Length: 343
Image (cartoon, rainbow, N blue to C red; front, side, top):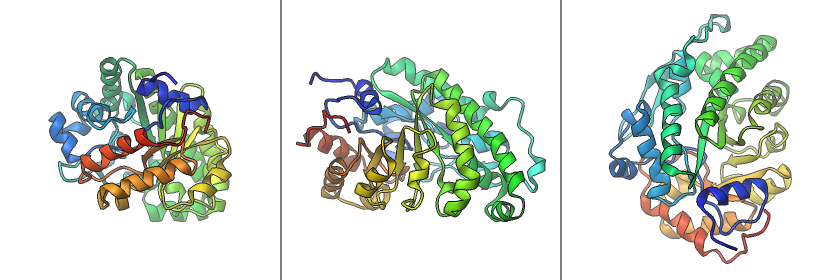
């Protein structure tokens, strides 16, 4: 095949078309200290300044050779905009939510300037800058925190768990409100230039039962995805072992799944049907603590066992070395398997 640009390669993979070499992407944060130094853009400012956020995100493509850039590094920008207290991180730590917002679900009030406040407008502004700089060479991935995960952070884990048992209808109604907020932020990122949206929804894993996901979260996820999937490709990201419910994720209108490499990859492929699998590389075991050969082995295994695109399975630690990240691209280029076929 003729050589493809990074953007052409990724979009072909999403469409189920032929592509030249295995795409390498990251639907979650790819920021680390080395790339902060290279871009001169450090946390916390890179989380709250559009230009610095774009500078750091751009290194995914310009320095590491990935086929995508993703400028939203934590899970805090929406939550900060909604009123939660946030620690915006530093050169040695990711941003985190310090405290929730609600004592009662009825207390929630959406800020009137939600998309124009600093936290959300930073992400939108960074995507606009990346669109101008990249000139269509790499795919821009936006990100939202899923409605269930927003609920757990806003209301607290224990309160949410109690409410899922004692006032499920009220929780479902509130999740609909949150899904509208999620969709609004996603569509703003798409308008700014994102062609892929990651829906990060770790709360849909071990925190709730499979049946609770089916009854409460799944209808909300479908509702959210219906508002997005005609405008962008959707990647559903979730950590942990999700083999008992991954088939349900695949029925919510998503295009791809980014899940932990601890799951059974060949079995995952059977369970998700036409949904693409993105990932295969353990961010903790391999990228943070492994050697070069560990990266090579995981890339090869992922490519041979159903991955349409190679990626870290979750946000990387700021301590991950560029050496390990660069090896993902290098190994993907050397694969002998004919990846110019429909996956």
